[in-house]
Length: 153
Image (cartoon, rainbow, N blue to C red; front, side):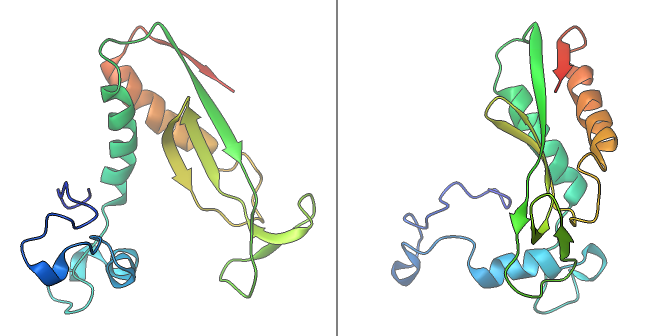
């Protein structure tokens, strides 16, 4: 989907030996994670670079496009959930409330639609970064739906 392909499972591949192989193998995802935009054209092994701002906008755009007309009201739900760690991952911290080493990602949903996902370390407050994310998301929604009532919980 990120590179404009519709056949994500690979069933429609031209070469017979490639059929049935999904688009993103582990090595592809690794290149996306580790690739830097400024070196993507010259690095032999990490030519894929993520545009995190574009990916953020895409999540909200997909939500907006799922409606034929602007709704009168939407709810934005914020959720900080523990993601327990098993091992010595970078950025691991012990969280007293969850009683484990974990990350504390921030998710923002509207119904079934994911509008934001931020991986955060557990040494942050559960609300850390939520105001910045809400300003970005609400601004993008307001640009298309200026009269829609937005309720945040």
